[in-house]
Length: 72
Image (cartoon, rainbow, N blue to C red):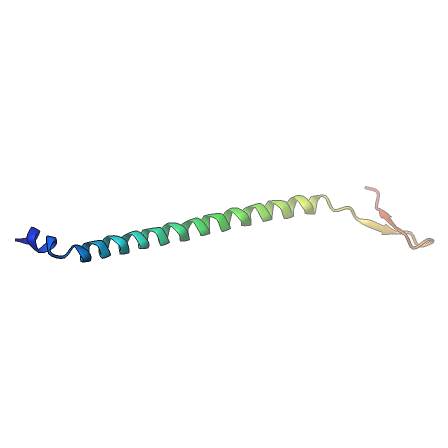
């Protein structure tokens, strides 16, 4: 009896399957966005730390007013 009722409503089953598929696709897409954003944030942080280590301090020569790299 239940099987006949299900066969009478294939549109409902198709809509339920499509809805479930859209829900799962949206969830996967959101998780991928978060994963990629976290990976980019880690990469930016690593690049900032690397760039901060390469900063050369400049020292102004009072006689000429020219800036030159400060000796270590």
